[in-house]
Length: 301
Ligand code: ATP
Ligand code: ZN
Image 1 (cartoon, protein in one colour):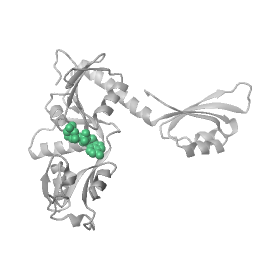
Image 2 (cartoon, rainbow, N blue to C red):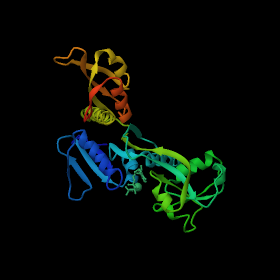
Image 3 (cartoon, helix red, strand yellow):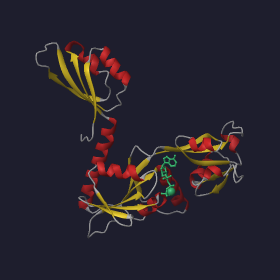
Image 4 (cartoon, helix red, strand yellow):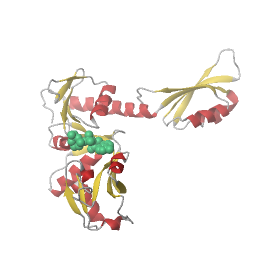
């Protein structure tokens, strides 16, 4: 765990790759400003008791599990694979998921060449499948009694069927473009994933525990604000109820009189769900006018 003398949280973040910039942007939004070291391997936060360690994403679960880092940001795919391998080796799992972070969305799927026919999971029986996620694939194989032969490779998995190394692949997919470029079709989804904030489940020193609780509250605030919108409009008093029902997920509204106008009021509502063009059109047809939709930067309940 963090060294008791310095009492700083140590957070592991991917050094380069898909999760790096979004993770650091989130920390900046919760008020943690950083100063990069020359090596780029670690940095100290300027005004918070936090140090970041920049590493390959595959190393993050080990660092957190073994207590070298208190927390980390990692894809659920990497985390699940790690947890399954801990189980296989009968090792202690000290990791807790604290928060799904709403970015890094992808799915772990099996894909096979377009030219091969697929008629359900049993079509995969006995196949040789290349993957960087052998434990997750093996679990899937056992659950579905597929007796797969698993070829564990660490990168460029998608070329394996083209060069005859495997019949199919099991890899991460987001848009599906890489699969298309390699003449592969996605046939079964094994898991869905997004980035999560993990921590070592052993207690932190009490001063850090308090800071950590604030950090999680702030992260919640940022994530909730991302979903929420501040909506303002003018509305006839007679149709207020009907109009506000069109905005889902709000906990109340602020009604403000309009000077010199008796039959209309200004309404301010914070809605926690997306506000789409068709919602605005419905508001307008229900009598609302001067409609403004504003993004929210931070929220605390
Ligand atoms: P590292 O050098 O840190 O090992 P990497 O090549 O394993 O990097 P990235 O490709 O940067 O990792 O992906 C990091 C994480 O981003 C993945 O583990 C996954 O959770 C998420 N991710 C989201 N979309 C995709 C995608 N299309 N392909 C791969 N990963 C994705
Ligand atoms: Zn990796």
